[in-house]
Image (cartoon, rainbow, N blue to C red; front, side, top):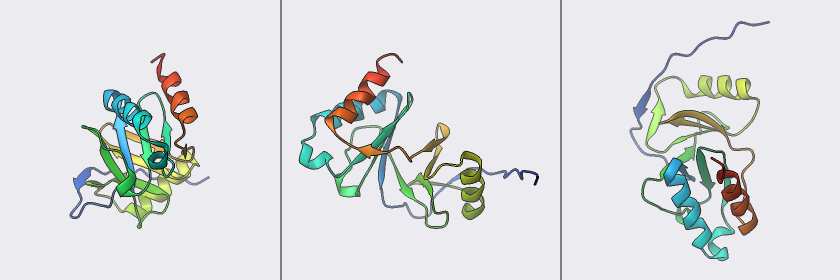
Length: 145
């Protein structure tokens, strides 16, 4: 069995921001993003996908279709590390191809969102189309948090 290699790294501001492909909202901002999605017409939400856990709501789609609420941040795919999504304004200071390989190997799921604040790795493989039913499941899941 091979030994795991630790990668020591920090976040740095991207020289050029990436093009938004996902809206990312944590905590109270996630609740506001969910409320915004519930008010959007179906012809707008039909081009979006979403996934959530108790802490975060992630909505993927074309930049022009993504909803905006105050406090939402954005993410994009990383060409240097297929299967890895990063904040549009931040990047690790370590080689992205190695980080992508390490994370995808560790989590055995793809794609993965690597987030800067709070520091987190969130699987995106369960993004489902944004429908009233899917949004209601997210809302019900948060009812007990």
